[in-house]
Image 1 (cartoon, rainbow, N blue to C red):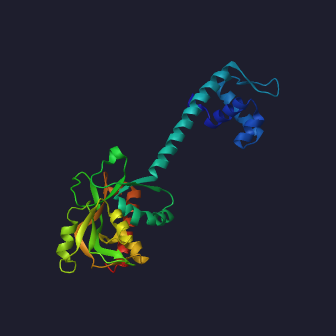
Image 2: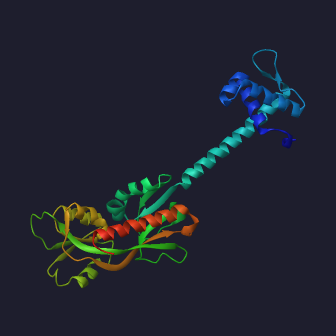
Length: 291
């Protein structure tokens, strides 16, 4: 029988029955009273029985009308719940969850996310800080920005973003000279690589270890000593003349990769973010005269 009925007429009937008024139903549906009355008559003709008792201005349902109204309430409620859930899923799909190493996130990525939002206003980037291995499913993460200093396995899809660039910096306004260099313990080979590259220039300097790069940068800004750091992490400080390079830039044989549990091409958001991220890191390299 359903194929003989107009779903539109069921909606008009539902509104008229709910508000017990053709006039109010017409207002809620943004149509004329005549349109509502016509749809109800067409529905009654198709069903072969009367749905309303029209003895007064207030509509009253017949027994058959009561039964149909109960069915419509259940059906329309389910449809509404389904549409609400679909809308929530759409919102979730527009939200890209990215995991990024803490100092890189704070010093380099966060200041640039407004640019990404301006270009792609239709979806948000939720940023989580973290390093090393990532469990995409358990942590509910879409992408992870990592250096290739560990094996993430063959099941993870990866896109190279840029090579890591390192240099030694010190505060631009030095109140006292010091031969102390702050080193982050998050990279085990950092001091060894630096000595190999700049053994003669920094002879006599000693290292002081701190847990994170951002602690090293803050110590350097406070004038406590120099620090060895990624160019991406101190780009703004050098640009604003808060820090100054005291060594040449060198590659530490690592690179930044964007990781995903699924192929990038299966999600346009990942493709767009990957391309944007690569462009931003290339722009940062140009700031230091790198290509």
